[in-house]
Length: 307
Ligand code: PMP
Image 1 (tube, rainbow, N blue to C red):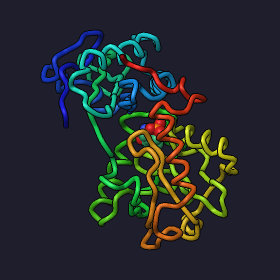
Image 2 (cartoon, helix red, strand yellow):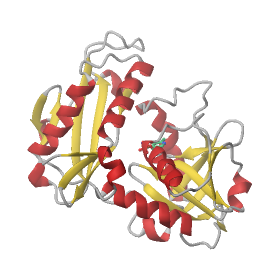
Image 3 (cartoon, rainbow, N blue to C red):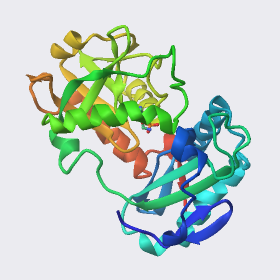
């Protein structure tokens, strides 16, 4: 992990090594925290945060769902992220990943959480590709997970909640240790939900098909991809997908802040389409990279420049 000078903690820029919390912090024991993953891209005009407003709004939405009273407003949280990047500016040579977290600190124990103090931290460090070198071009190998995605009957999947990631973590471990790059999780009725940290799309006969957000996070990257697809005149269908439909799809890919648009070249031991990155996926990636490089005027409002 590439450390930077400071981490923003409860309103103060704190030296990286001092940004610690008590072992009896409530979140550490019971898993209730809202967090975000945001990228800042090194563009020709300098470092720019991608879709800062949407990510910060989702963070506050997660807090509302999780019954956590965030002590900072949206404006304050956005300013904190910008200030942090400005302060650490010299530590960033490439793209940056921003991780704000609203969590429950030290003071009370027991499951009832409302008396625990609410703490906020924002860290930002330089981070490259998530699914490995070459993944964006060559694609990755994916396996249906033996873990079922958190059910809407028990989990609050619209929240980017720390606790939801136990399911993701187990699925990811299983996938990696079985020789795959990523897991694809089905929902509790057997339809495709999402990856351990990505939403999922297929392409069939030139049409982009993607599951509804019933048991998937409302991915901001996915929203960007759907906007691009509309612009390119690609037909979109948001409906349930079975695993065998993926076996006969022409293309498949993941979307996510960390994964960006990652092609899936193999699924459950079967090549997806030609087994190589597909044409539609390539076009979507091309347009996506123009947006994050600040080269698409229509979406210039997606970028918040730091300097
Ligand atoms: N699903 C899950 C479970 C995730 O963790 C993520 C990453 N935040 C996504 C989907 C993709 O969401 P986004 O594009 O907003 O990063």
